[in-house]
Length: 431
Image 1 (cartoon, helix red, strand yellow):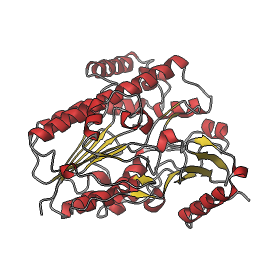
Image 2: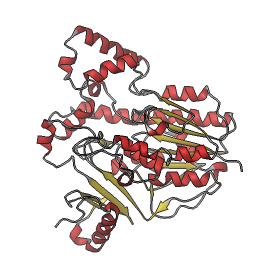
Image 3: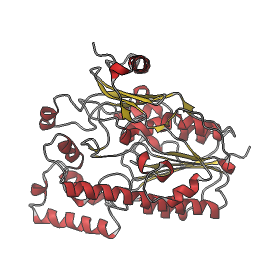
Image 4: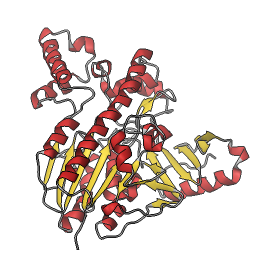
């Protein structure tokens, strides 16, 4: 049988509510046009609010609790990072390789690089650093990350090096462009054996958005803001929000260029094209900037637009779509079966901080933020429970509701979470 090409595009950090096909205000005409040939799944849920565990779920079809590659409240990601390599022969790339596909991957995300499981079973995989840094300059910046900016630039030689890096990046369009333009040019200048699996992670939607962020301990600065140790100025928050919307327009241009290329090489009709995101981004709606830690809608409700080969349309049932089922969707589509991945419920999980946190953060946190959480969506309801069994969110159609007024629904959702957490040490019900 003639198998379709598979094109999986992850617009890293794109939240659902800004996408125009979901009623958002971002300027994305190419995505709107693609959606006319596609299925727009209404309720996609990311299994995690950050990159690594979510991509593992996309590639393996497993929730983070099942594959184990996620953050740890005490050890950050260090403890579980190497678990990813236990799944080398269980990914969608491995399955497609066995079916005769040529696998090509491009990524601007450091977690999705040649040294990760995501490059396994690929005939070609290229990691494009999102800030255009050379290996030498990248090492320099990495050495500065734990150091406060005033110490970092006190040496004139260091300052001059950083200034050159900053000017070079600005010349190349940073921060609006974070490597995606290089990825697109590489694709446009290539030819792929048929059938091919093309995986792309675009980082444009991802932070940082401003030089203010870049001149600080990047990840820590978001923790510091959350804990009110050192908050982002309002003018910077406004600028970040504006840049976030501009980034949507940038990635939309990439989508337009890619679709046009597929039509030129006459592979558009015979391609399965999936456009989604691994997680969203909080922009201070709930006093939180960044992603990870929490399970807010802004962090785990993502877009999912699927163009089947020959623009085939199928009926979508009511319910939710988990990114964990993309592997199942792709597996079936490459065998000529076009399936609806909607289920009656979907889950998402978070375990706390992504990095080992210093004493200052631990002292300020007091166990409020860097703790495990689980969420369930079912029949319009959403429930988030933390490791102590405390309810953090209880919503119906996005609106807060009271547990005492919805006891039967609450009991049902708690039972679902109890089954989902399995043998994991996690308190679903507060004693």
